[in-house]
Length: 244
Image (cartoon, rainbow, N blue to C red; front, side, top):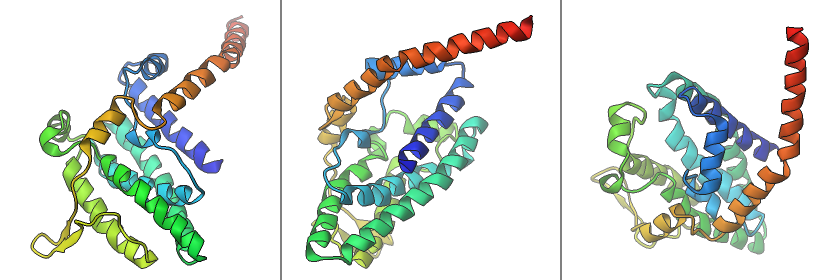
């Protein structure tokens, strides 16, 4: 529950940063519910076992940190300051996830199989989180020119692989990539091709649980309308009393 609350807080930081650019929160939520706005591809995948909590913390939050740390030095102040707070919290999530995987990897044979299964399912989606390859990324060049991003998608993805492989080896787990090998010349790992068809399908809202999760999101918004209405009415009365 604490992790979910933390992640919700990250969303609020970013909503506040976006509002400084003149877009209201209502407009952003409408764009999300209508499908116009895109959200992180990783939220389109199901969690099947308890080991997924560890794998998500280790791999997904680890990839998020890799992507967001450079954004702390972005050129736009409200966004950069939000990233400072997000990264501090993500680092806790990543450590927690890795420790969960460590416990499972050193547990019973069944627990280790569960940890390996979670790694198998989350490794590739976590690499997709950095976005499409640089030669097919419509926003990277502009983001780099405006100094919103400080490293490209492919540079960040390579860094993530180079850090993740020795961590998996320490756990005694196997990265699910038969093409993975050390490249002495570049001082990093070569890795297999990412299934970009899967990535773009997820971006289009065709992920394994995309429709269910968007339905839950819309239902929660509609079911909570009375709370928002009550809060707005209370604030209007309070403002009227102050004015009087």
